[in-house]
Image (cartoon, rainbow, N blue to C red; front, side, top):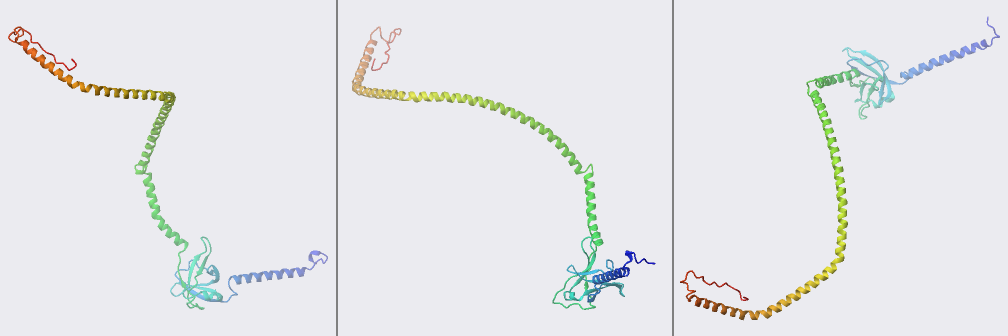
Length: 317
């Protein structure tokens, strides 16, 4: 028997009724939501297309136009030719964008997204598709087909890479031999670098020695320049005196030249008579010699007697 005095059981019928009402409302909301998601309460018209295989299609699959959901896939059946007929339901309000040239494709949203049927909008100048019309279907490659195609393209590349690796890893191949030559060249370069370092050190020592010598030379040159400065200063001091003496000497030479000119002018008239007198003396001397030869003692018949010789002389003698 129920204890009417227990507070937990008070208004029990009301609470149960409210719970049942809430549950029924929740179920109705779920049904309405599912119906809305399934376009059960939207005015639709039917379109269809035929494919070779039904792989990838599923009932209830969303139909999208420009990324916006406009319908769902309603039925998948086989026709008399063993091909797959796909029936889709599209909302009436989207009919104005679906024309005769519109195309349906089976695509995947993203790399790992859901598979959908995408419809491309048609030319507004063409006729709209009506209920029961057939829409064009364009087959697209699935992920598996893309992977298979990529695999077929990659296989030759992988084979070529394997051949290249084998060629590189061959001990007698050009790559290994080139690496060996490079290692040998590296060793030679290290030896050359050591020699170069020694040459550089020697050159540095020579440069230091040359710098010391140049410094000594410059110091000596500075001393020489100082002495030259003193000499130039002394010359600068004595030059005027030397110039005065040279001037006097030139004046004396000019006076001497003048005196010589005057003496020459005085002597020149006397030279010609003196020369004539000299010629007369010489002629007389010749006559005396000839007279002496006629003397017996001086005769040429006396061969033992010496012949007098007259030495030539100038006018001064």
